[in-house]
Image (cartoon, rainbow, N blue to C red):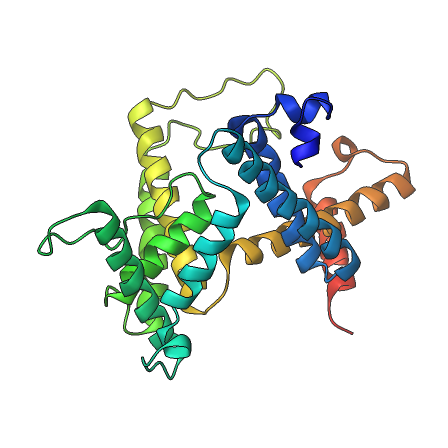
Length: 279
């Protein structure tokens, strides 16, 4: 990497900055996740290398600007792993994963407080440190997890189901205020038909209610110890697979989507679901 960034290195690599590399870091991260989901070990080997390249790139640029080196990065990681696992490297006791997570959160909070030089009686928010730059589903998962660790949690799963039903009802209340003739699928309307103008205040309320519904869904996933990002990715792939079956069936008939009814499309969709059913 030092050679690539050097005077006789690669023009593209020399031009890169911390900001220009960020999109590639996200892209490589998602490609790692896809390889894991596909259990493609050969692909994962390459994708992990690509992700490691991002770390090396940032560290090399930091060294050029005399901020830190890759050795400093690895030293910090080693120190953190030891400090946050006192039940392994020290005398602390943690018999369950829940104990480990509680200790981890407490240690992280203490580290942040120490770095910030805050007074002992000034506590940092439990939610501090959850980045607003990460995907919204992941942010929701982290926020609700942090809150749950201090007891802000539904005692029973049934409470979450009731909350989901409540959010659906609140969304329906706002949808009832939609201008006539009400919400319509944007791509199935009659050509030239007027589109109802929706007041901004109502749009804001609808957005709030949809957001509340999604946040509750993330909480349900967390409560069931499921990763909402992974769950949604699987559903996305399932939708893609089934939709492509519908496309192939229509192509075999020599038909386009515009030439068939919704009932026929639904029948093809059900057919694709049957193909997915466990044998």
